[in-house]
Length: 196
Image (cartoon, rainbow, N blue to C red; front, top):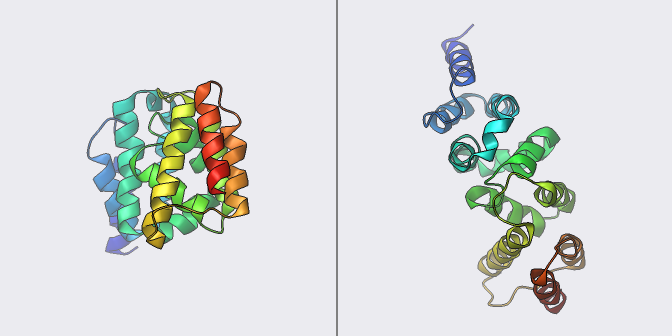
């Protein structure tokens, strides 16, 4: 066993015994990811699974989920984009159970998935967002945040002022906006139709 392996397993044991609100978890997960990105994702899934009840608390959710997401995204966006979709349980925990499912790095990742060719991954994520009961923000407002992020990301990437979505992207967003109850639904549906 190499020194790198020893460090990796020490980090795994240390992270696994931490309280979910411990603010050192994101940096430790970053350290683990720099050694073995796949192991960091597995450890992240373990932490979210074993502390699923804690995800209803916004501050704990921000620490264990949102800050870890941002740390891993900053280390390697490419690896995260490649490996996260390969773990449906982790996607479900992040987007379906977390109070911070539509904030920060999570929201940015979702918008990029909607705008990529991997529409199936975006569909899986949006399915989680639509059933998330731990989020303090109503579903209509979460979808408004998703759409704003998608539109802003599209405009920035393409250096345009008005986004133009393809048919698959339009149908995907429309499907989830139609699940909204209340006046937000009509506003978002109309906006999608105008841009699609």
